[in-house]
Picture 1 (cartoon, rainbow, N blue to C red):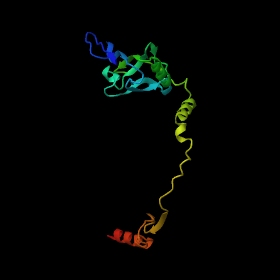
Picture 2 (picture 1 turned 120 degrees about the vertical axis):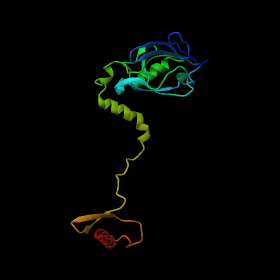
Picture 3 (picture 1 turned 90 degrees about the vertical axis):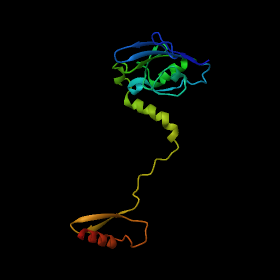
Length: 195
């Protein structure tokens, strides 16, 4: 059966089996077990060394194993099983989770990001490699599409002289001919300005 364990000091609710309270954050150890890999864990993560930030829970699906175990959006993933996430790229973290099969143990940090400068250093990941991998992810969507045409104005702009060295720009309108002719616009504008 699908289950998870939660132990918070002497309390035994349903998902976290060990919690350590620190001044500004809480460390949580979560263990989830499922019957088969057709049952999703129920969370989405973001970040990783390739993004220059720690792995973090982005979303927890309602009524999922992750929710029943007490996981919350914005929890930081410090360990997957016995593997520290400090140096993991996002795809490596996904693969590490897949390798856990039907029992997943996570060490989470809630309340503050992990204290490390490693995520701020992207020296190992040159920008051109990051952009190339991002382009590879989306290449199938745009391979057969022609480039979009350059933007065109809806109608030509026409400059008309007005008193006091001003110019009035008017768009051509899809209206009866002459209603918005240059003479009518100038006459109406002059009458309005005289008032």
